[in-house]
Length: 295
Length: 188
Image (tube, rainbow over all chains, first blue to last red; front, side):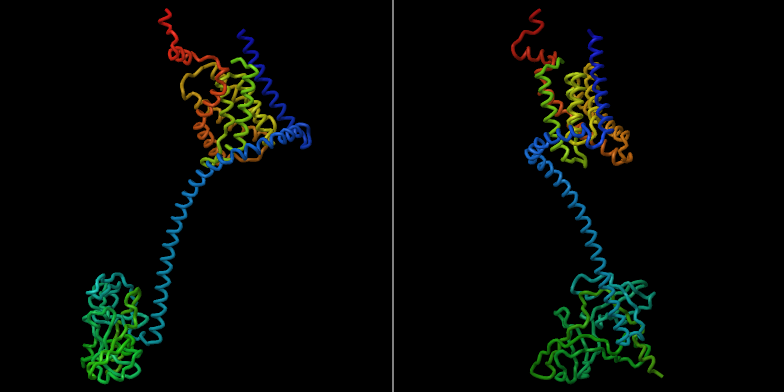
């Protein structure tokens, strides 16, 4: 009985394997128009409507799974795109900073050439720190005594005067902005030629006053104010704090008229945008003109 | 198991529905980048439940159905699934594993045999596809996926074929106690 079952089982297996191999060989050997291909095509035509119906009926189920898959894929893609976006934003920021710096450097080069500042040996410097409060109108640059920077030397950017060196160490220096309460510079109006001094307007950030002007009524709104290039000292050795002549300080923004001539207040808007300074120049030979004139 | 006409009918229906489900839906759902393959699981489950001869016949028929429906070389899947069904049936007949997770192992092994066997036959037939890491990865992922599906597929097959299966001694005992039947001790 057992032997019979075993023989039967083996016979079935052998028969199925042989049948499979026969089908395989015959199908593989025959041409596309052969009988097995024809049977297969007929069977497929019979099955096709069933498959199509099942396909439609099961579409919601497939879509549900597809939705899960799509959601997972979308999440993965979202994370990837976010990382890509962050990288691009960083790159954009870097490029923007580089572009701005390049613009400033080009501006400075033009300023040096057109304004004749090259003779004062400008040393370009990068702003590395800035005072966060309004009490100290200062910032720090990455150039110091090792680069020839000394105390009281003028600091400019491509628009005009920025301030002067307040403190200096070997590799760094602190710049006092021209809006600092302690700042002052001898100046003159470009068009009317009136001399005077520029001081910061106390209590009004970013505002300057053009004071001690003999004929203040001559000064007009919109007139440019530049450094006068004069010094109170008679000795050339004391001229280290001199600002060279002709550096733009700002433009007359408004004029307050009082009862008398002395009550007239001339407000000047700085030429340099003091809120966004990245690259500046320190003029390490500000007295080059005077040295040349002294016999 | 004695293969009665009704049991054969149920197996045919199971194969037809399973095959259509595989072709129209399951094969279009990718998980980890590969679709699951119900066919080897169905064949292995039938073989594991019904024995080697029904398993081999079921495998042959399902393989033929798949080859026909997909316009593939006739006989390839038939040969592979015949081996899978026969093997699963022989495991039942020789070892009769009682562990609950035995169908999972059988399903995983069946998928591995089917995938490797199918690839080997394709290579033997001269289909130009180099053995690449991608192919190995696909086979491995299909095995993993099918392993996860093995138990539910086995449960469905078991439920379909339950009236025709030989009575499980454990089930018989359980039924006897829960329906108020006498225990062997009381009968003694």
